[in-house]
Length: 424
Image (cartoon, rainbow, N blue to C red):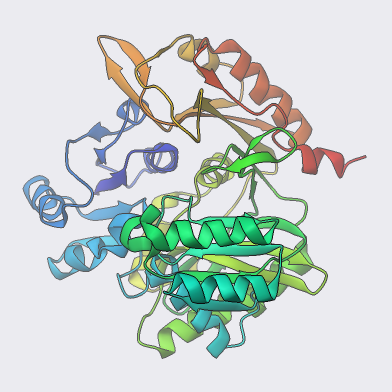
């Protein structure tokens, strides 16, 4: 088969890395890709948001299957355009991608179908939102309704912080994505990520994973796209996984089908593990980044037929095998991230890190120039390692991080701390 992966981040590097190992593969392309992806696939300068250009490339090169990595093309309807052109694609339709494209849609769906989530209100008027926040009190969460590059959810410890967030978002901070906000109760507990492959009717749970959203050690500082991840996630024991499938994933799949929006693709549930069990924080309609990297590192099965089974509606006959080892990833980000940061600094010793035992360096924001690898984003590398347990994988990953020569970058030094602490 000829396969095209859409995207340019660490998630897409991990997908290309896994797909490249499939014996079913004849050719692998990535649009637009990055310096690391170029070692697994042919990178092509096609804009993921230009559905006609993507379709044209597929026709010209005989692409059989397209795997869409990021959320924006999914919400914009890329899968719909490809399927209408007779090109098979992995990912939800635009109608189904509303689970991530509109937080209001998801909250209302949960309310209609008794899916556990935080109590909420929707607002388009700042004065009304402020009045509600002052009456409700803090802590409280303010979210932009639409896609905001992972920065649209603000957990506010004080009423004044929440008022400022509501006014900021409705005032245009995220453009059209902030024309409406969701204000919801602040759930208490431990966060976890839960992933399931879906074919419209059947859901197949993937291995568990957990990420670290805040920029600083000890989970301090502002939220980011993710500073590290590990799998398995000890917080998600067998009971919690079963509860999540029964109370959240399966009811969502049934609800979407009943409402004429059958969901195909990977469904990523951001959970809060509360005293009352798992509750949904929000849905994403694609693999998490950086969780995808640790999942792919542990996947023993061929990824390609699993993704095809989602698209073809035959997931009920499918199962996946996972490595017993744990995987842990440390994100190396540009100094200043998630605020302003510089691009163009050179990263050295990547080859030395990549040849360390059980280490894979996934590229998230890089570009190649004159034989050098340059930083080209906020989150730049995902240094991933396998180990007998989380602590062993952690030690191996940080050994690889310390091999890389990049003074203009930084990382957290405590990725996996919750999992390691559970052992003691």
